[in-house]
Image (cartoon, rainbow, N blue to C red; front, side, top):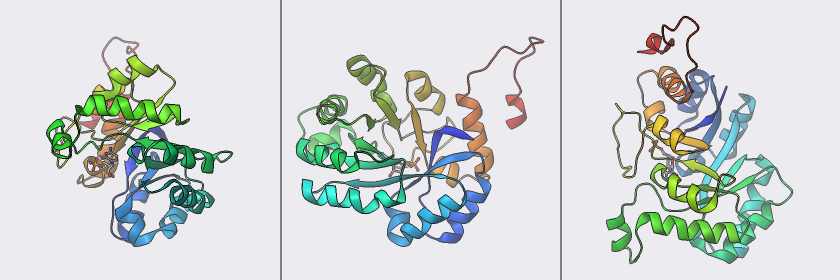
Length: 243
Ligand code: C5P
C-alpha cells in the first residue's frame, strides 16, 4: 500500500465513497474534507476504518483558541492520523490545538497558504508578502508553537527545506500529473517534481477520483514517484505497461 499519496475523498455520497474505496485498494490514507464531512461525517470515518484505511481529517479549524481546542478534542476519538488547522489563526490558537492533541496519535497539520491562492489573490486580501514569504512566515509561527507538520504548495518545498531543514513534515496538495487539468489550483507541480523537491506526502484529489479509471490513475502516480532501480538486463523498467 502507498503511504505517500493521500487521496482526497471529496465526494457527496456513501456510494461514491464506497466505490472509490473498493477501487483504490493500493491507497492507505484518505482525506475527508468539508464536502464529505458535512454530508456524511463520522459515518464515513467508520467506513474508512472498516476498509483498513487511515483518516486524514481536513476540517481546517480556525477560530478562537478555546473553540479550536474543544473541536480538536471532539474529533480525537476518530483517531485521525492528521488533523488540519489554519496557521493564520495565530500562535495562541495553534498552541491550543497542539496541546489538545498531545498524547494522542494525531498529528496537527498546519495549513499555510491555500494552493488556490496566487500572489495577486493575497495582495487583494491585504497581504503585503508574496505567497512564498507568507508560507515561510506562517511556518515559523507554527514551529514556534510546536507544529511538526505543515501543508504547503510544492513550489514552497525548497525554501521551506532551506529554512527549516529535513525534519519538518511537508504535505503538498495542488499536485497535477502532466496530463491533468489544473482546475482551481494555481501553484501546481507534477507528483514526481514534488517528491524530488522533498515533499513527504502528496494530497491528490480530482486527478485520481475523477479519472475514468481511478485505480489506474493512482497506480500511474505511484509508479511516477517510485525511484527507478536499474533493470538487471539494462533494458529499462516496467512502467510501459501502464501507458
Ligand atoms: O482535487 P485536488 O487534487 O485539487 O484536491 C486537493 C485537495 O487538497 C482538496 O481536498 C483541497 O481542499 C485540499 N487542499 C488544498 N490546498 C491546501 C490545503 C488543502 O488544495 N492548501
